[in-house]
Amino acid sequence: MGISDAWKAAQQGDQPPNDRDGDHLSDDPGFEERGQLVGGRYVIERVLQEGGMGRIYMAHYKHTPKKVVIKTVMMEDLGPDREYLMTRFRREAKGLLQFSHPNIVEILDYNLEAETPYIVFEFIEGATLREYLEDYPQGLPVTVGLSFMAQLCGALGTIHQRGIVHRDIKPTNIMVIDDPVNPTVKILDFGLVFFEQVISETFKAKLTRKGQLVGTPAYMSPEQCVGRSVTHHSDIYNLGLIAFEMMTGRPAFESRNLQKLLLKQLKEKPAHVHLLRTEVPRHISYAINRALQKDPLQRFESTNDFWKSLRGNP
Image (tube, rainbow, N blue to C red; front, side):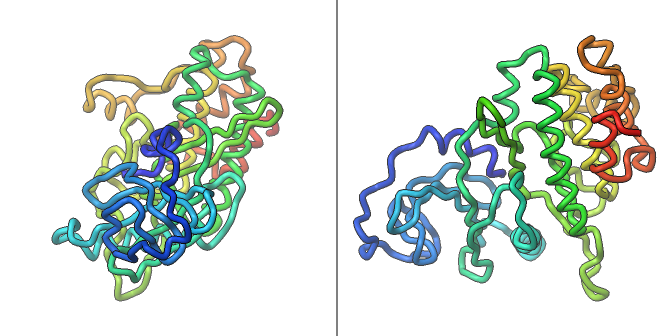
């Protein structure tokens, strides 16, 4: 369950209920009904999405119509994996709170110790990159694609410096705030985020269990496809997939068969972008292909190195 999956529904939703001053609203930790008050500050408007791990709500501030998105974990739904999943949820919130970046969705508030833990995110007006690309079947204008890559490389570089790997960079996890002069992108959904380092000597379990397939196959690195441990190099591979699609209008690897798609991620070399679309300079094509190397150590060492190569710097 991801925030990005609910964003479009949020933008097409109802107007906020007239709650006056909110004094009649309950603080029920279950957040079951429209109009309930969360954390004394946020009025629930409606459920945007419900999944096996929790719910995502559209809400607004108690005394203003400003919208927010609230992500919760429903403790009673977690089953025997409760502690593992809650550890992951808390890690997401605390990791996001370590920094602020204009190209990363902002976390506004949280309570991880409540009966129903929750995180409050800013609400972003815009379209997902997936929706945005639908208007450019042959690929974005090269200058726009480069602008988006500059923003994405900067954002991911920031989280990598904090020891965080996103693990799920894909077009539906990127919002585009359209502007005729300077469109902006923001990375959403840190639901798969985890810390690279071991938390402590006494806590040996990784937040993503060994051998567990986590991610979206069309946008997964080879190491993710086989359930191996990932590093920031995996995000760089994901960025390469994004860059390829922005420049060509199509994914680097496609198949309706899951096993064949995973095999392509593991074995198949991507096409050269400049051969698919002649207006794309060769140095951009070569930079993308290096980011998509199957061996993580053959990729760029950092997102900044990737960006410099996209610009044509050695």
